[in-house]
Image (cartoon, rainbow, N blue to C red; front, side, top):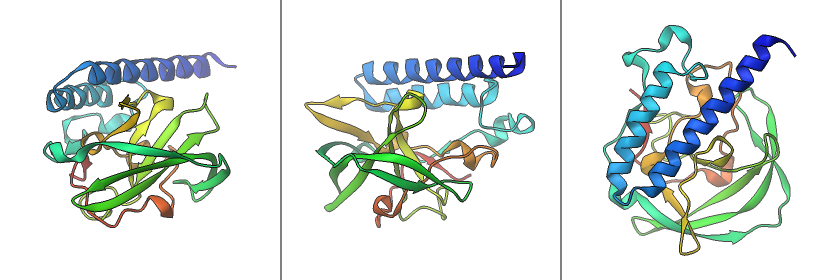
Length: 206
């Protein structure tokens, strides 16, 4: 292992630790919108300053930092989770390949009177982790066309649970790293996670 690769791994470790600490602070903040503003500010600093930023070095400036919809309280919810058979499934990636994940369960919730469901995927690489990704009716118009993430616990993005239900706050939805630099390979939402309704919350296109 070269000194350069060791340094990159240590930088990645620091990124994950920083993100994990940020989400711990988010979970500890009782006022959801205040937590969201804190998350936005910290995320902007990471994009501009951290060596593991998904932004190419030449684009680490205010013009290219993430943009967001205004905070929408009704898009924070608690989802009921039903277990799945833990079967391995293949999800598409940004490099036109597939990635093997485990179908860990299904989160069910209601948005604007519409019953919705998202498959929960457990990553088989890294050290494991829950990934919740989705597309919706804003994808390709107001938001990144390939979809967004709302949870990625392998990277520390974890909003927790309350009363045995999974916290899904779509105000914290964000674009995968590949949306900023195609050198990154990211898993993308499979068809079961394509919602037909618009979710105008979280990260948006400029």
